[in-house]
Image (cartoon, rainbow, N blue to C red; front, side):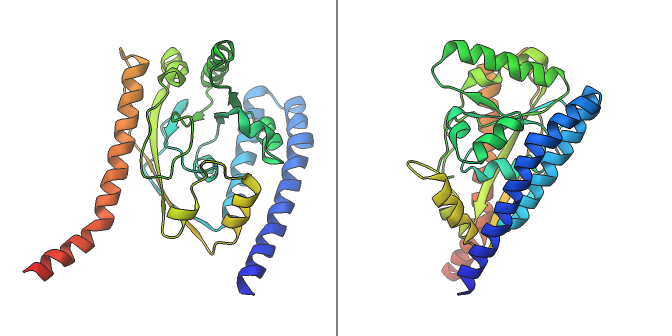
Length: 267
């Protein structure tokens, strides 16, 4: 009974938040564009987006432990990708636009809100669209805006970091933006339930997340990469290596108490 009440209560609050999101995206954002100068309008929109994501995080009971600081703007943030929750985890700390796969544009509610929030959608295999996407992200960085990217191009169960698509780093090299890796890791019960992979349906997965008592997650903002004189393959490999090393060291830290106990027992 308690679990059901928690689910229904969260679902109701989330429905109200989505309704507010529609009002903001369809009414407030266009008004801001008309009434304020471009720079002030952008800061105002970014502030609203962060507050909206903070409320989303509280409804889901996301308990985020943040380490490190976001680079000075403009920044090109690249992260490993486990779940749609990653967007909330990163977005509540970094104002800016996400680059996401085009499938998200068709998701109920989230698709519309993502489009209105300025998300750049990527269609894999479409060379003409990739060129356009690169130009769009470069323009955003030149306007002192942040871009957040998941270079794996898909989600994983969190047990590995797949190869990065190096072409996604081109906008950062063109604009000499700070390239900052971020490592995301879900803990406790969320380690098994948070991954959004394979044929998972968004609504079903959302309900599963709402049913959880809390969702524990760590996010490490790592030192920015110096891209001067480097190729996109180089910075892509370096970013992936830093994220992989961070996640591996976190795993070792978790296992350390167990290893110490085994050593003590062996003595």
